Image (cartoon, rainbow, N blue to C red; front, side):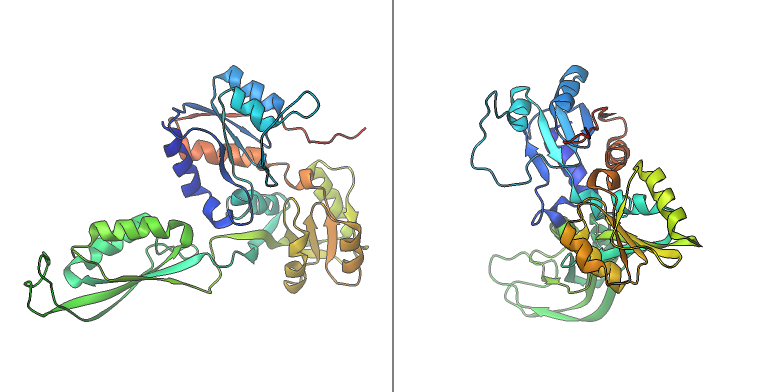
Length: 366
């Protein structure tokens, strides 16, 4: 399979376009024309993962963390300052990073973490804004079902757990075919009126281009009248963090013991002592303290994330939601395994997907 096809399949499942403005995701290093039959999935790119890929005959590494967090002006390396991407390029490897694209999907890292902590009735803590578009197209009534089906197959009409959602209203369209035209209905030079339906469907903006192409292919008109509108609605399909409820209330000490066991942590840091029983819990894996305000507004008893700074703790001490730092790596403990599962679901037998054994941190406890 060409790398270009591999990249398209990954981006169709994990919405890199929706998070690309705030994160460096997608193909970081590579040649779209490469043939790809094997890949290695890893938490992050390091020398061990590179060696593992080469030894296994893989030419693609798919990572959770992106190896390029900051903008760079050049790629150079030396014995005192090695560059991991230069090392990967020398070994003719392609590198693809998903990062927050894995965070914002329901079968991704945050809903998985919520499930492992026993949360029920889970929803997004912070639904992703500015992701929805509405496509409106005017279609002759005898082609309504065909166009609607084509748009649905392209990814339009998905609202929460419902698919193929659409609205159609009947009306009259009019047009005057010009010279050189080949109208589906009518004659050049003669004004025509036609019974048409106004078809409306919502789509995630990352799929809008694909849906428009599918609609144009299914539409019988030579020139198609359609509009694409941005929507202020928040998406039911993508968001940051997760919030839910424990099946039964737990005292603070017992709850924290459970969290440490699930995340493999010996210590947790909290903004203040839990004075009541815990029921409503919010999580955001990695560095998610910016969503603490959402947890407060959602009346969470506890908000679990990583990379909490001193002043974050200080500012949250007087608020009812307890802020907990379970470390960046602790909250992302299962990221590589989730990514491995999703890659296997996408490619099945077409690409061999290996899970890297190199899952250590960039820093170690000494």
